[in-house]
Length: 146
Image 1 (cartoon, rainbow, N blue to C red):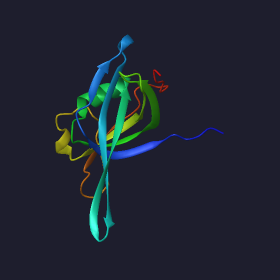
Image 2: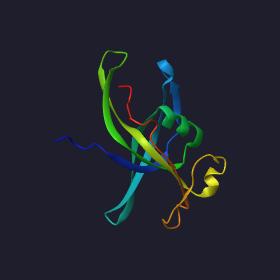
Image 3: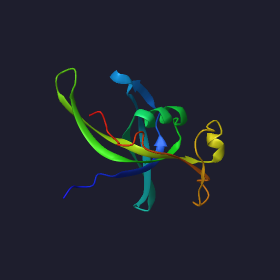
């Protein structure tokens, strides 16, 4: 039996996507995503923020670079990946990332008026989310270059 590796996040971009072009013309984009939760501790409301490293490949990276910006609210679906590398002192380091398979831009329609090419779907969600823009996988077979 194989396992399931699925991550769903809704959060705000911590900075604009950083886009790189690798050998063979493969595009990769990455950015930090902040998710926050609030809870009560000793009668006081506390907010805890988690930061997630998001990575997008190929066509999905291209779309993200055009439409996503620091502060934007986004829904991300993907897989958890941990990779290792050696730093300058030859110490092995590990980093955990979310490899996005698709994303949905959330927010008011006015937030995306500069983005006429993005498909619009009316949302039935209350108040804060007026429109959604859904961007799917970057290629048919979902292959990643690692």
